[in-house]
Length: 425
Image (tube, rainbow, N blue to C red; front, side, top):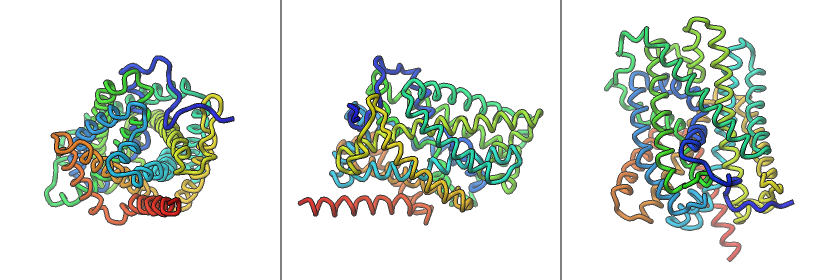
């Protein structure tokens, strides 16, 4: 039975979320797998310039938040980036946006779930089967919660955000007694060439604000609350990632850091090691579920909207009487199975898959910035975003083959769109 949910819209809350109620949603949209592995992955790849990478990545987000605020004001009904790109760059590129989101989520979430699974595998001193089973449980839990309703999702977001912050603060503060030497986090001129690729990798940590553009309809006042909610979430999350990276740097040599389970290594240095490792592992898995719940719901709404716009098959637009897009969720489940099985079979591709997903976010940001310039003209905000676009483009180039996934998805989606339009005419 087809429901009545409108295009891209999550099921609404009658009163809407207040500003402080929306903060956990924002933090949950951004946080998740990123905080589990990025402090250690960035430190392992960039070394002493890792804190500089986090400062730059956080600073680059601020002008983009102003752009997204203008986007929400222009499209307060939650149409988000697709309508924005269509208005500025034309319908062909606008129709590519849902495909890009689906492409990044079906790789990014299984990769993040496998990171959480690696925590469980290491904590239990078990084999890869535990990692794969944990990843599958994370994704199944996210799909299951999204079939229940808004109240269950909100409770998951609040609990997950609180637990994540507590874990990060405990681990970061644990390194204070050993932080008698700042050289591991002092920028090094000889390796500055690694900074831009490191920024691209670190961007995964902040990927989620564009998700809020089509979840913002749940806010009580989207045009007024989007910016402060996003800035609060960005500030909290950016500070936590910097503290965790610094804690790793002063506690563990760069060459000894595990790029995906570095936080667990940090936990192993604490008193009551077994208890702390167990708690960190549990919170890590919960944080990944929290992040997956938010993204699965947002992207399932994009699939419904894209189906109603004839971008994807029309059958995917059907929802239940309660507005649950079961067919869209089923599509995501199948794609999760394919991507997750591939990454489980080839674990060496895990960090590369996450970096490639981050590059796909950058492609979406570049499209948004180009559209913003077309729509707004030369303003302070648009010029700042233009400068950010230059940095992002340079980071794509510097990252080499890791950038090919997002570019290839855009090229294929654009080609299919143009061919279908030509046949229609």
